Image (cartoon, rainbow, N blue to C red; front, side, top):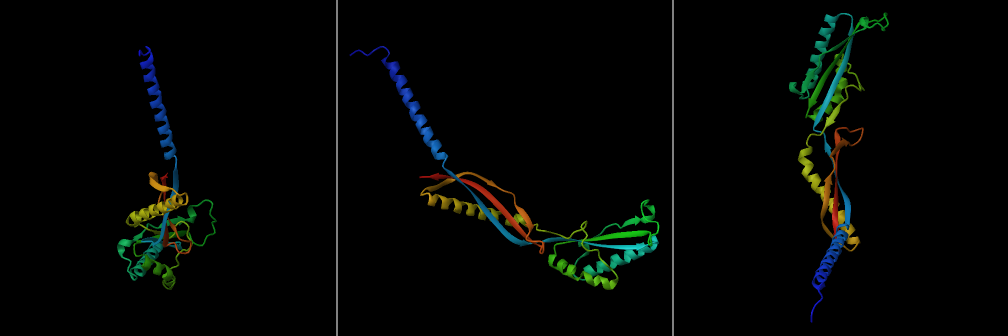
Amino acid sequence: MKLPKNFIPALLVSLGLLAVGLGIRSGFGMMSKSDRTVSVRGLSEREVEADKVTWPLVYQIQGNDLPDLYERTSLTNNKIVAFLNSAGIVESEISINAPEVYDRASNNYSDSKFQYRYNISQVIVVTSSQVDQVNELIRRQGELLKEGIALSSDNYQYPISYEFTGLNNIKPIMIAEATKNAREAAQKFADDSESKLGKIQSASQGQFSIENRDQYTPFIKNVRIVTYLTYYIED
């Protein structure tokens, strides 16, 4: 039996079309499979105590004689440093800023009938890892009144600040915890849909945040991290 001249080319074309069709079908199947995913979030948070405190002690002295104000400022600084030393705050944790002098006579808009010409503002800053000791001193700062020292309170320019510097020590644990929580959520979804949880398609990690637990205890911090993961879902 003699085959037509165009039989072999037609056969090759048919086989090619069949292969293309099978490839497209397989591709659609893979696309359908890859589209079956679940995206979840994992959270980890914990409370930690601040390990660094910055406490500015601010006071003011008024008068008309600058040399006298200088002597009074030096004496007051010594009394405050002694108060801090008595609670174990060492010299390296104490810094005394240069005094700021305000001369009312040099202010063209100032009332000329002032009682005191000069106002001295002095800031002594405690920066320490001894958070408990500093907190105790903050509670006892009223004792300085016996020495004739009135510290300025509620000074928005010089707030007390607390920091937590040990984040690197707890990062790996918290990331692992957040990832575990995310996988548990994805596994629950897969179980409820009578499917199997596959491999991770994508993952991203949010920023660590460190915030005050509340406005009353700024020395207790809340550390938080959220991870985002997408898993494949299989039959």
